[in-house]
Length: 167
Image 1 (cartoon, rainbow, N blue to C red):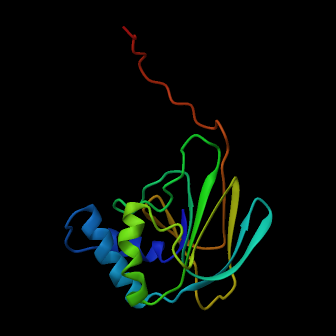
Image 2 (cartoon, rainbow, N blue to C red):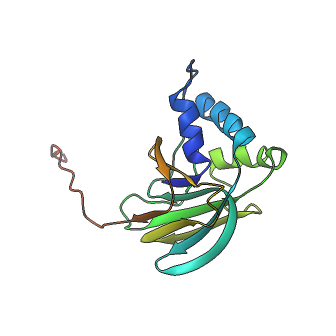
């Protein structure tokens, strides 16, 4: 789940007249969204404690590592650990975003300036300026506007499959 530019990127990907393939579709949609997007001012709360207020390009709450056509927003995320990885990318100009983009795809961006990372069970994104909405994205789909609360419910889904015999 993201709050920020992600919902706009989804809009451009999902309504593209021509599809070129996952990674390229998302890269072009991200560029297009960046040209029109006004960064959102968010308060971010993790497990009841405020992380602070930020001017953000995107705030991500991830239980998996990969999103958006192969971007590794949360390279340390684990699906079954009961935690969400929170990645915040502060607002920056397109010129300053370009060098960060390949690092997001490779998962080496967490120590870059203006990138914040933590983990928690319950994440809240609270917009602080109505004139700059926090567009929401849930698994590649536009989901309206923030505020948003995202919470892990451990062991809520059971997956069953055929058993394999070990020889």
